[in-house]
Figure 1 (cartoon, rainbow, N blue to C red):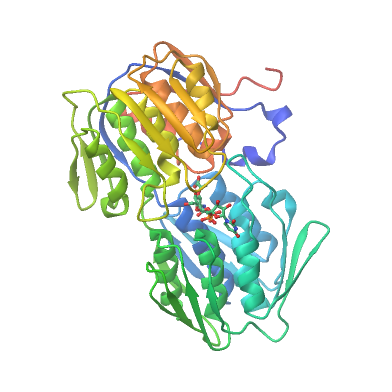
Figure 2 (cartoon, rainbow, N blue to C red):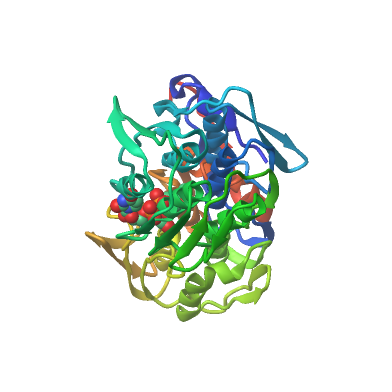
Length: 439
Ligand code: EPU
């Protein structure tokens, strides 16, 4: 798989910006393997800051966000060694506490180091992430929770500066709205706090459960992860551990969508279909035929077009916002009028504008998108705006007439491991290219 992860270090004006050239219409067939979940791997990497002992993580996806998190850990004094598909994270002698803006601005999830740093090193300085392409995305709920646990927090020169010289203490905290990384940050912070922490209205996502499993392996006392209320009894210290990251449900859902659009029999192997219940139920409602095994989803050739469907994104176990863009592309090929409501983020329809440029009939009004299908799509040059939007454009290109150039593929590389290689192995005509600095 060709994935230039170090391109992040090279200024774009020198390196050029990588693009995909996709010729639509090639049938997809065969088996596609699912990588480890980026959004589980990120908090698990941050959790390594909670111990002085090495932690071995297996199945980390080789995607740009993971490389960025490894760089963040590097600035905090940890080193990451890769061997035989596993990464061992070891803390060095210098224990830093500053996650700088250059790294945080490229990945908001860097904020996940805040809780563990405060819990073990009792201080943290983490650049405040700005807004991003899908919405304002504040971190106020992370900060309020840490204050409830005894931290003093100020904002200095764009950095969140947090201190808890006497250590964090357990607290009873109710999230006013559900937040995935907020739940993860406070869960990590609570493992080393004095006393018991009760977190209410928590995110139920499988990635939270995966993190809790790593923390338990490190010696943390965590109960109820995956439900609304998580109880953490603080311990004095945590040990090293070994943990395998769960498969990426969003990557799996993206390939199921590709298979429905352009497949002639595709098996999505090494996933956990039980993490995709709402998504798969929606597909079945639209007439998709799927064969679900405990660790795989087979999408047979479909004998009739899909029907329009209406869906609203929701927190887990609802329909994932991270599959909304891909689903919108799918509905451009379904018969009838579909509606897609985005309930989690306020600005997550930028892909709709690019899909319209490819010929889709979509009307966006606030958080609602209405799609008229089926519409033939035509290849053109389209611009990726965020990770999942990029995936939606690649999916559209697979069924578009002629050639599509998907620009700014670095968004895709943040979260999909070798998508070009995986699609090409299924038979897609997809090529990664770099036009060079002056184009
Ligand atoms: N929110 C606040 N205040 C906070 C935190 C969140 O108002 O302090 C709001 C957000 O603005 C948003 C909503 O609460 O409107 C939910 O946001 P959440 O905090 O749950 O999102 P997140 O933790 O920042 C994670 C994933 C996202 C995924 C969302 C929702 C990671 C690293 N990121 O983000 O993944 O979309 O949960 O499921 O786990 C992606 O992979 O492409 C991606 C964006």
